Length: 310
Image 1 (cartoon, rainbow, N blue to C red):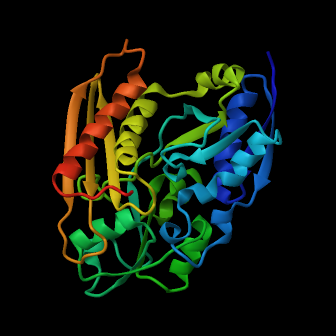
Image 2: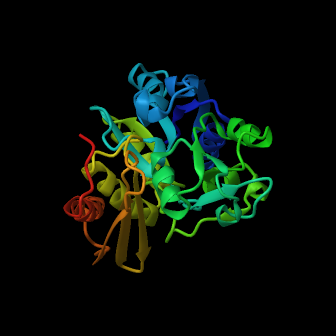
């Protein structure tokens, strides 16, 4: 059965790319799709770190209101921007195949973060990236960097930073791979939970949409992302949490690695934890199982001194 659906989306170039990607996938399956572009509070507040103004939920609240009042039936998100707990009445219906989950080093002068001179200025507003950079190069000066992808690149080009760190996935999706000077190995720069993955949010009372969107779901990506978000959820994860989590699924073995750092105290060591288990493909609650494994990793972090965000 063909459905007429509206996708609520932010109006940044990357958000529109993602929404149009989902639009094309659904149109290929015979559905009629239109987009509803919206400006969220997170897009409007650019002079303060997200950790100080309400977190990543600022990027999706208006989209959820559109679903709630019937203006749209689904919203497309970068999963790393989606809070660990959705409001009552909403759910993630599917997760698309993941792009590159790594962080990218972007600079007009330097090939890598290792080649920076002492005291160089690097742009990021991510607490996760901040603690990881500090562990590699404690001499580097980190300055806030907010705005959409094009805005961040312009700030670099205008000379405000010697380099900036961005998600590789966004650059690649927008055809900006040439801006990437190098990509960080996940062994030294663990990604954020859900980084590189796209999720589709709907109202919980639309089982018909769950069935339609299940055709777009990528099982491997979903398992990995639920494991990562399990770590973050157990830690009270938000953009106020200097936390990284990354999962890999090799055949039936799920491996999760996480890191936590104390951004309030310079020189504090990073805390790492990991867990590996067999995932049974026939497990009917496989996503819950993956999430529970993530919670085990979070507990290992806490046992070593990591502080959950309360």
